[in-house]
Length: 365
Image (cartoon, rainbow, N blue to C red; front, side, top):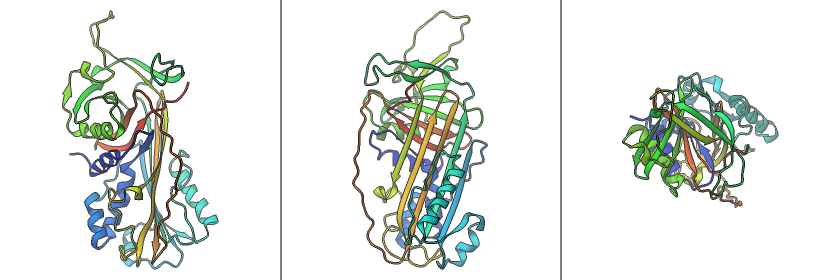
């Protein structure tokens, strides 16, 4: 049975458009589970529906999950919060953003090895509490790729020289074709040398991220497979060799993907609809707290030697009444490509999807 955080990741991925991005349900889930534990009334019901159990710590040499909580000086904190939450994870906000923001940004930098450098939520005089997690993943491939410049002959990448990654002599069982609601999805397991693997997911031509990524996550638990030649991007032929052992040839591309997510854009998805409205939702933390901001910043780099990824998730909370949450209009640019693909970084012992992403613009050579 897959971890409940995977269900959140799949539901979140189903809301994506086809822009390049990366996200981590495994980074959000611990905060939602923590809030569910201290919430009351409808806020607790909604949060508990999304995060019904406490987050299970990942015991891994490749993966770290840090948590930090900062409260405004003078904010009354409940005895239960002070007793149950490790004092080493708690800090204080001065109310001066010129002091508080750099301090939180340093925490982010230090807990993601510099992959992310800013706390996703801004802090100001009205910020009562900030809750954050920093997830970092560092994977070295068991068998590295060979960097070879790749110049596609057709499609939107035609004419570009990309950071191609080639590898031959592999085990064909690393590639399987899953029969999913989105159609056949080719899943290539790129094995790490410790306990995290990365799955590259190539769906049928034209299938969007919102279908391919949830289908790939579902295939972790339901591995119904089709013959390899039925998979997108898969061909099979017979060639001369030194022996009769089958081999797998892989040609993919390197990529660097970033994602910035406003969780309150889909407040229902994260169980935050009631918690984001004024009210006394978390009395065991502090009176009249509500969520004023909830965001995640994520980044993943896939190279010939491994994967580096990090995700920082942060919730800001206000105390008492406050002005309605502001919205900002921004320019959005869509990149259309012939064959976008998804990826999942999966903790092998538990099946937990640490990060998931969608690649449309690979790294140039």
